[in-house]
Image 1 (cartoon, helix red, strand yellow):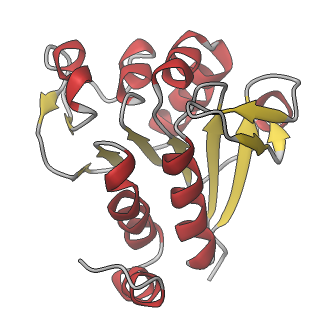
Image 2 (cartoon, rainbow, N blue to C red):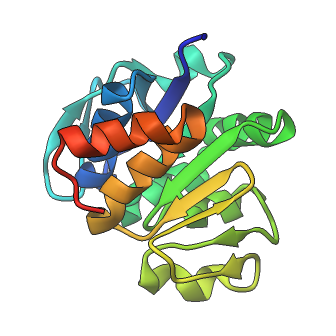
Length: 186
């Protein structure tokens, strides 16, 4: 089986728990995760002032194919995703080729900004709901999966989000094994 690939986008103001927990879970599951920043800076300063060193900048990998594109939340990071033409291009490519897209917390607002997945079922951080209900079928579940779109609510749901992605990309047994090894109680 070919190793699955993921690109996790990150920008100043992204939510560090959502970025790191998701990346960690997927790497434990055997997914090749690339953390890509939006700027030339090799470090991103996250929403709680944690600095993360990116693997690459999005501009250098924009034309590569990934099994999934992942957007962590964080208000400022999500605004950066929403205003980035490169992020829009990557998301449009994923959607056109029917590959997975995942967004958590405030990041579904960036999906809306780029016209992604209109009418699908989603969830988000509760404060984002009013910005999304006119474009999507909004649910308040911990994780919502609608075909190739995976969304979740916030920092505390990052474990469930990462495990849901692992299950969709690989299989339930792999996700269950990762959860058990991390002592995650479902």
